[in-house]
Length: 480
Image (cartoon, rainbow, N blue to C red; front, side, top):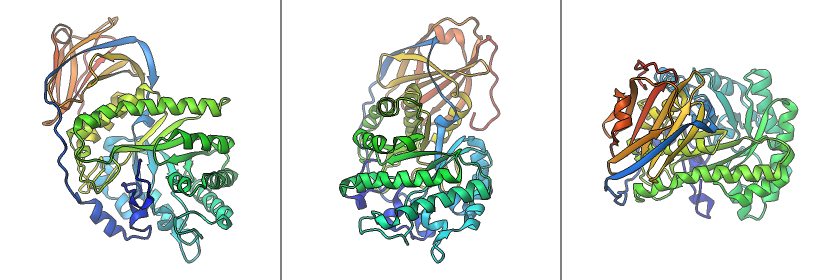
C-alpha cells in the first residue's frame, strides 16, 4: 500500500501494529478497529444518467479465474478464541473463501515465546485447529523479525541476525508442515519491508535476508513455494531489483495496492482507479517473464482495498458502493489473468467483509458470487462507457454468468448484445445488488434482447443461464 515517505506515517489494517508497537494488546487493537475513528465527506460525484452498449463474445476466451481470484486475509487465527467463534465460523463457511493469506503485523511476537526466543508451537496449533471450516489454501506470511532480534531504530535487521532470522522462518515451516502436517504450500518470509530498506539505501541487504530465509525454509520442506517481495505498493523498479537479486528463490511474486489515502475523494475518482489493477498485473507479468524467462511465476496481489489509512474515516468499502468497487477490481484482475488475490481483509470494524458483530457486509456477497458463479473461463466483453463494465464467465459445468457493473452515481441504461448461443433459456436468473440490498428475480431472455436493461446507481446485476437452454432455478443460499 502506498505510504508517505516516513514509515511511521504508514498505517493500514495490515501494518497497524507496527505503528502502535508490535506488542500492543489485542483488546486495544480490537477496540480501535471496532470503531470508525473519523469521518470525511467525499466530494460529489456526477449523478447524470448514462447510456452504454455492452457486447459479450461467448466464443472468445480472455483468461481463467479460480477460487484463488477471490481470496482474503485473516488474522483472527492469531487469537484462537476469536477464530473459533461459531458465528464467525459459519460466516466463513457461507462465503466459501478458497484462498486465505494469514497476516498480522505482530505475528512474529504473538506466536513466539520471548523467554525461549522460539516459536510457541502450542499457540500455532491452537490457532490453526480453530480456523477455517471451509479448508482453504493458505498463504502463510511471516511479517518480519521478532523484537528480541537486534535491529536499528528504523527496524532494519542487524546483519548478525540474518542467519538467525532464516532459521527462525525455517523453524515455522518445520512446525507447521512437518510436525503438524498442515501442508501449507505458499510462504512469504517478509512483509512490506521494501520502503524502509530503500529509504536507508539498503535494498540489497533485504534481498540477502530473503534469499537466506527462502533457502533455509526449503531445506525443511522442498515442496513449498516461497514468494515476495511483498511490496508496499506496485513499484516496478523495486520489483526489478528483487527479481535480479533473488531469481532462483522466487516461486511467486507478491505486492499490495490500495486505491487511495483520501477519504474525501469522490466516488467517481475511486471507481476510475480500478482499471489500474489490470494494468499493474500486466506490467508485473512482463517483468516476471523478462527476468525469469524459463519458468512461469504466479502473481499474488496480497492486499487491496479502497484506502490504506484506517484512520482516514473512509467507510465506503463497507457499503454497497464498496461492493461495486470490489466487483470492478475483480473484473479487472480477472481480465489480466491474476493468479492469486487476497483482499484486506476478512473481519474487523474498518475493512472486513465481516464486521465485529459477525454481520456480512455488502462486499461479502461479491466474493461469494465470485467463488460460486464467476470461477471459470472469462470471456471477452466490451463496453463503450468507462463506468459500465461486464464480466462474462463460462463455468466448467456449462453454466454462464454475466456480471454487469454500474460504477456511476447515476442510473445506467444498458443495451446488452451477445454472440448467438446454440441454445438459450426463456428466462434468466437475475441477482441485483444496490443501495436497497440484494434481490433475486427472473428476467425474460426476450426482454434482455429487445429492451435496454436499467441498472441503479452504484449497482451490480448478475445474470445466470445455462448453455443448453434450460432455466436456472433460484438458489436457497442466503448469499445467492
